[in-house]
Image (cartoon, rainbow, N blue to C red; front, side):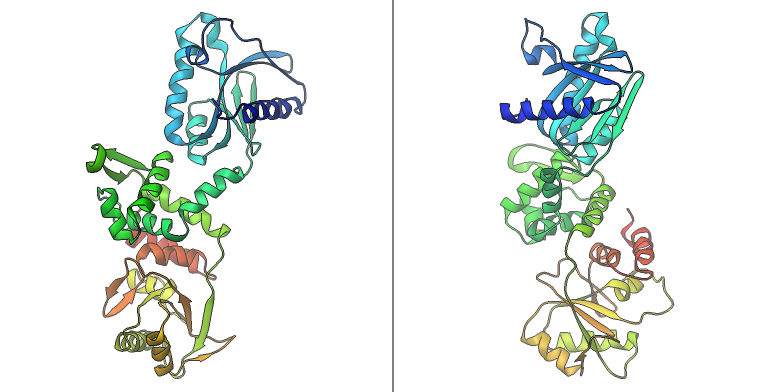
Length: 360
């Protein structure tokens, strides 16, 4: 049941109001059976629905928030009730009401033809003779929960999983790789479990996890980019140097001044998986500090608004960078995400990199 009775009543009323706003639809709460608890029934409330004169009985389970791992239990409860009792129950339609339902949970419910309604106004009702489907953006609660996974230190944990997607790992292991506290790593893994993106084995301190579908996790991160503020760029022009030579000069200058950097965007993707005939600009992720300033000064770079051939993104971490031919490149996952924010043929290059280098 929904944790707060007030929230439950509000959700039920919103659901009924949404149904009543549809043409030729009547919806009323049905009286509950006098005997048996909600758990015995397998549902929380019953609604008598009439669509264009056709009666439909809705058996409704109410939840606070629903993720893919919750769906299986709900499906089992509803199916047990519908198929385990009198024959008349077989005509009933099960439906899940929740304040928030994750996109993955909605997909599972649709696959099983189980209806749902959330506080964002999304409605799916595949009843016999009455098919209703209204898809709206996720509720603010669910959107915030998903977005938090791909920002700040939590994103470092996701990054660590995606660069080694086939590994089994414990909390302390992934925390060390992501350079976060075990508490942060544990929180992220709990959230990913809810979205059914992880597989588990063992118990207690020895429990290990493994990415179930790395492609789905990377897709989810990519979708969040449009809601996140793009990083600020400092644009420079380095005179009298072609792009390939600029890469070598950058590597030499930053290494000499012990400045942490990682080439990203097109220049990095071209080294990982050649795609374009030429690159006009180099974009780097750079750890700020005196060494970085000295290296840029040594290059003779000057700040410009137009015509830049070097752009700098100030970075807090350079996790999982790779040295390719003496030049440090951002991880393929980071390069892919950066390219998705780019212009021109950057998105095409991103998909090529994903296919050829990332592999999922």
